Length: 326
Length: 308
Image (cartoon, rainbow over all chains, first blue to last red; front, top):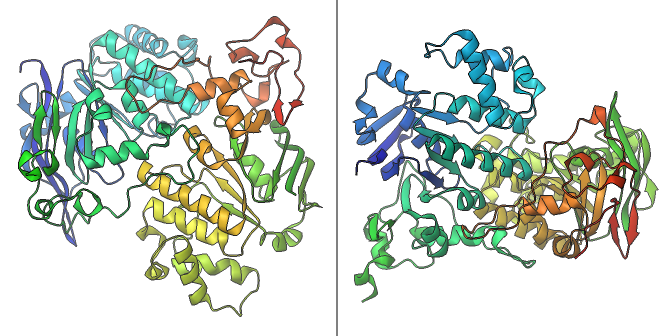
């Protein structure tokens, strides 16, 4: 499809360690269309961070790309020479990190940092400054001209995260990666940030890859959702499909666990018992099998493929294959 | 029986008036939640109760005894009865000690050296559903959820009457969060513990707390039973907080009440009602200072409360 912006195609990434290779990502496939908001949901250790750093190619030295491609506008980023990759970062693909307290340089004014980030632009200093003030205004920082003079410590956490968003969007990228941008913030500020992101996304028409483990935020913001579990995609689809008709037991249990669903006071909250398998020593078959209460014999022997259930809904579970029920 | 009675608690750091008179009481066996945005003073309240933060004014009565301003020597025997669970699960465990010695450290500090430490470690680990061989592990070998459970085990070691828990589920995955809350609920029932829980996750509050207080700029603005607050919040700030809670359902379109701006600086407290400038329901008369009114166990500091 021509409107596909980013295609992750059977990506497998290992970390070389003394204990052997950690299979951090296995056969990851999904795509993001232009101007779309795609959410990635998954718990600690599911490979969210490895995925982001692989897209940006900002990986640790012990990272090994074993297989697959990361195609951005048809071009495989994993094959791109480093200087080309540098041109892309911050210009076509930019990122907002999780911790707003640590993303800014503490000894430079916000204005200076917002000028520096426009280093590719041919515009003059006055013009760049005006652009910086305009972006600050766009993310709802009052009195932006004056605040350009201030330093990061003079802003609250919510404001700093909005500044980080302003800086990431300055070059009008085609893809914004947001790595748990609201996790460190209060619920009231979280809502402000999400609403601001939605507005800016429509204005600039950029695609967003939004990573979060907060299901409520994903449900509110995203068009499509990719559910990851220990380095693999277990389900992906339209946000309504995922939340209203989840087809993988992990997705179903994850949604059940969210106390936001349970309106009456519960003495015992649902959980997913068991432990995440060791990435250096993966069991055969389905990775969720040990924690799954619906497992069938086939789950122990064969890895279920991520198969299409209907248009725009994929899941990797044998229970969706009819021959299992016969 | 009232176990903890906090009256007009005040804390200042220099010019910054962090707690401007906090009042609440916790019955034996009850769970009380303190809710509010960052900077509202929640953590300072429980640290001041535990004697870990200064409190220049007011009173903290535990089991009928005044403990505000108690010296470290006076506090030490009390720490058997009041246990603290800190916010950062891994950071609150010394990296050089094994889990076994970390959870039995309270016995050593309290001079209970005749105990069989190994047996105690095993018993405590069992209580929080961790395998006994974890006693030989170090904090860096634990996941966030496991470190939390070690924090619970350590808090329970001396069989306290009251646990002060600072954001006990922050940073936990949803599947593990439920596990920890179930554990706390279960222990509370079995051991008859009272708890003060700080959180900004409202979804959590509903399932653990009997009563809750909502803090804004170092004061309670509303207090009541958890059901009453969720079903019928009277203070506009409470209503805003509850509505800022994204639902895990793409079709849920709740009426969100936007909060204007950010909390004001504690150095420049607004006059009159301190929430006035951000309040979507503010009236002209809100420039007057609201007093704390209690009606049928439901406390409120607001001149223009919401009905319904």
